[in-house]
Image (tube, rainbow over all chains, first blue to last red; front, side):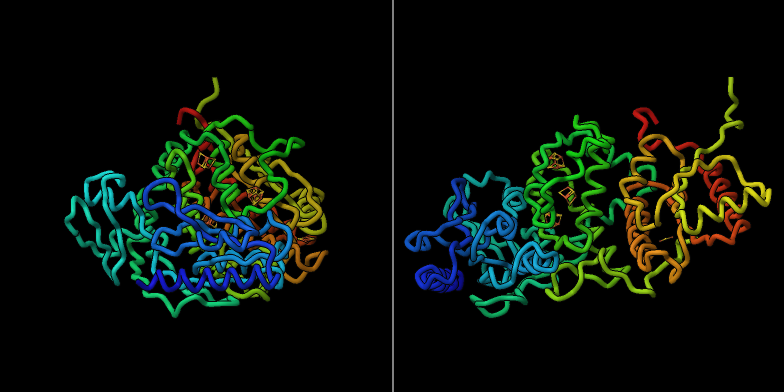
Length: 321
Length: 142
Ligand code: SF4
Ligand code: SF4
Ligand code: SF4
Ligand code: FES
């Protein structure tokens, strides 16, 4: 019910922005081609704004497109996307005045794989999946089944600290009612931390042996905005272009270092990976690491200096001889 | 045939030319003995060291990496070592989580007058590397 109202409001606001010439583009979500899914909608056409939707499946971090579009853009942003936009502003990749942020307080996005696992059926066989407060209602063969939302939301949503956008032009709804479960959100990391060091390395060797270096993780990541990535440098060539696990792992470690303080734990890289490498067990660790060391959270303040261009004379140095 | 006990770790040192490199020089000219395990690359500032250099060194088979710069407040370029400090911290801690022994990634502040400290640091780091053994991280068979 609530989503419908938010959606109507979004369409009105988006149409007005285009009609009044306040933006050149609108970036939002429309219905996807696969059941329940959504897909990005990028449009200049005021009539196609009626295709814009808000529902529990608006998973993508649309800020990725900001660096590719010229002109002023109206963009739909959930909590994490919103922080990615702010982070891009901090890095001078986007000008604040060039974006009109249509903020959506986010109750968490439903992970259809988790639903499939719980129900034991493929998504195509489900009649409906809806959110009702702290529950998710799945209709199969005319029968309704209820699950706690915490069992079917994406892991990164369960760890979300700021589901309601803080930096916006228009907030499409009041604050959200996210059910968080910090432990569940760090499950993968905790399992790894419980292993001896050598076993952790073996784990990642095994995972990165599957990497085909498609760079989907890099392409989808709003924080990976470099025009020329170190992996394509040839003099010197830092890593071999062919996908060997050693170089695949180096790529991902360095990518994580490059996005430190920029990554908002949106979870997009892990979802984009075609061979299901648990990339979030790296990105979320880095996210927490910079918070522990420097009390830095990405994309919280558009005036703040980016983490790695800044320093404090009191930064920890207990590891330095 | 080389015995396992004869194995000597290879340590790659990135030394800032204004301080630690001069410190190493001083150790040499004052005939202090430090382990010959270190191979030195002179850098303009500790802030020049990209985490990629560290990964590349480990990939090439170095057993450990030492980044050494001027003390906080003494950097020739004012802020290079402060930036290096953040980079080294996240690189070391993150790689430890991934599965690299933190002994393999080391940092120090050594001034141009500290030949003695340079000797101590290299001795200590080399000793640590001997304890943990050869770097087989990137070997196909471990
Ligand atoms: S998306 Fe997955 S397979 Fe593709 S480069 Fe990234 S880690 Fe490798
Ligand atoms: S590294 Fe992954 S989780 Fe972090 S911002 Fe990029 S896509 Fe999102
Ligand atoms: S991995 Fe690093 S160099 Fe490559 S695009 Fe991402 S941030 Fe840029
Ligand atoms: S000049 Fe020595 S660390 Fe910067």
